[in-house]
Each structure stands twice: as structure tokens, then as C-alpha cells.
Length: 493
Image (cartoon, rainbow, N blue to C red; front, side, top):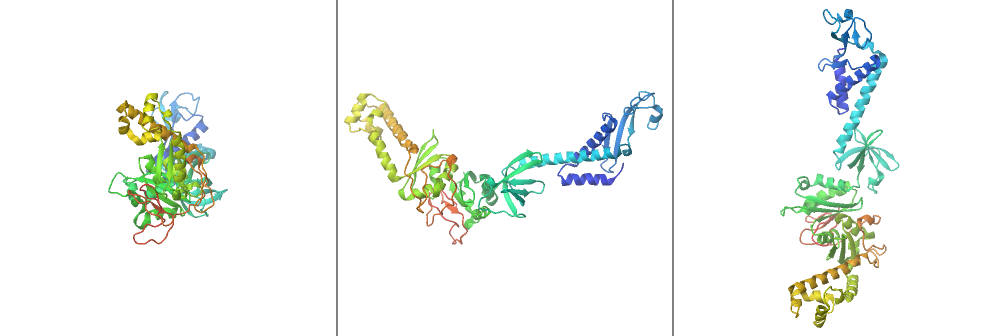
């Protein structure tokens, strides 16, 4: 059968389904072989050829010449074989042309069904593979349907779902509206691959910055960590190895144009940008901005961080309903407990009064010498230092070093227990909501609308921390958004 329309139809199927032309032709061959098997009982001796240029489809059955035909599907008599070869004799093999008319209407319909079924399966597999390679990437689609809070998004080749839990709560969606989101998963279902989208995932914020900041795309600036209360506030830690590059400033952009583009996409979500540090204590202090003048003590074994802040900075460090400390905990991966200076000094005095020489693992003779020298508490031993300890009779360098290390370890251990002690919950700056002392990432309180701090100052020598979330009209030399106060040299947006 010669028909150029066949080739055109196969080419159109391949184009629409994003499949290779060779695959579609091979699928047609398989469908015709299935039709032959249904008609003749076997297709082992049948071949199907499709000419690329002419569209000619040929179906050939290889049959053996025999005097008496017992199986017409596999055998042929010499008289019929003479139409194909000269002087046929028993044992010869002949390729017999099978006309389409022999198949009948049902067989042709079956071939069509097989063709479309396999093309559909291949299309689904291709969609699954394509979107599986786009995990974490941003794609654009159109809102097609809203069903019980979930958004069905038309991506052209397939449909995706934006679940309610992955949406920004303050946003409202309408049919026909264009929506951007990142791919967080692709799952196989009975109806085909299901693409799961998210606008609340940290990767969405990462990719938005990558689109807006060339330094991130080029690898000059790296986003180390992201923590979000979607639609309300986010913290982003950035880093660069190049001392000539201002990582925070690159993300802010001239007059804040880069970060404001991200903020607009996230429906006004405030973004704090800080400079990442390999030192956990420094990183935590920066993450707690806009609070500043903080001091942190780390318990690396327990991944806990005790942060001491000035009394006036307590509400800023914790944030409304614990939002600031909760996001800082998510960003750094440390469990953070914030206490004010007054409470810290009160507890420190209580702890120091209990740090007697009996805590030391040394001989009574050495303890007596320390007491005689007026060093009757571990705090005084630490303040004396190794040099003064070695001045005492009978205490050499090694003994002094051991005494000092023990005293410091015991004192630090007692102080870190402050993390597990309950404390009075202060009122926030607004004067109403109680705020938790610690907000680990896994025990986060419900998100709340953040309160931007006004009149705050840059935080530290490394970089200014900038807070972006509003679209004011900045002065020539100002960064848009609120400028937050903070700990050790970071920039928040």
C-alpha cells in the first residue's frame, strides 16, 4: 500500500506527542504484527516494512513450499508459489505479500487501538522522564481548575497539581491565570504521570533568586540555606569565596530591584538576606537579625545554641510569636534558645555559686592549695588562668592545664543546661503575644505576619543586612524595604 498521507500522519503524531518518528513507525509495525497474529494464529514468520519516502506499507509472510498444505499460515503449494519464484520445489521458502483486504475491518481497528495505546504509553513515559529531570526547576502554567483547595495547572503537554499545602496562603487563584511554581515531585498514576508543584517550597525561592541574580547563575554567589514561612517571611544565607564580590549586595541589586522582583512574585513575602558563616555561633547570631549585640554559646554534641541578647533586643531576637527564632533555627539547623541579659546574669550567678572545687577531678592536696590561694570556686580558677595556677607551689604546667580545662568544661556544661530550663515568657514589642524561649525547626509555632522593624541599623562589618518585603520609593542611596538590625555582619532582605 503506497500512501504519502500515512507518512504525514505518522510525522504529525510524532510531533504532537513529542516522540521520535522511528518509534511511531516501529509502533505501527508492532500493531500490524498483532493483527496478523490474531488472524493467522502466529506472527513469527511475518515481517512488516514501511518505506520512509513513499509511505508504502508491505506485509510479508514467509512460507515453505510443500506438496500438501496442512497449515496455510506457514505453508504454500508449488502452484501458488510459482507466482513469486521460478520453478518452486518442496522445501523452498517464499515471501508472500498479504494484502490489507485479508485483515478485515476488526483487525484494522485493533491495529489502530494498539498504535494509539502504545503511543499514549510512550508519551506518558516521556512526560515522566522530562519532568523528572526538572525537579526543583520553575515552570509556568495556566490555572485550569480549582478543586477543594488544590489547583489543577495546565502545562500544555500534561497537567500538574498545586496542592493546598504547597500554596502561599495569602494568594487567590482564578481560572485562566498564569502561575509559576517549582516542580517538587513527579509520580506515576493510573491516568499517567502527576506533576506536583509548589510555591511554598524553599527551592522556589532559590530558583527565583537564580533567575534574578547573574552571580548566582554563574556560581560566583552560592545560596547556602533557605528558611520560609511562605507568604510572610523568609531568611536566605548567601556566601561567596571571592572577596571582591558583595554576596548580599548582589542579591539586593541596585536600589533593591533584584530582591523586589522576588518579593513581588511571592506576594510581598519579606526576605532577610544574611552572609553565611562556617562558624555556627556567628551564623546563628546573624540569622537572628534584626536583633544585634548578641552572644552565642554552642553545644555541638546536642546541636543546641544558647543566645544571650540585651534586654531591649529580646523581642526582636524572638520575633512575633517566635517567628524570627523559628526561622533562624530552620536556617541554621541548630536548636536555639534566646534569653535576655538580666535572666542570664541571674542564672549565671546561681550556677557559679554551685561551681565549687569539689567538682574538679584532682587530689585533695591540690584543692587545698587552690583554696589557700583564694581560688575557692571554678569561676575564680578560670579567671586566674594557667599562668597564675603554675605560680602555686606543687602545680606544674600539665596540672594547671588539666585543672583549667576541667573548670571550663564543667562551667560550660552547666551553662548549656539553661537550654532545658523553663523561663518566663516575655511579651512581644506589641504587648500581647507570649513568645517561646526556643523554637527548634521541628517544633515550630504557627506562622504569623511578621512585624518589620523601623529605624534599624546595619548589622556588622562584613555586610549590611537588608530586609525586603515592601515596595517603598527609596532614596537614591537607600535599599528598598526595611533595614533590619542584627547580629554579626549580615544583610537581610
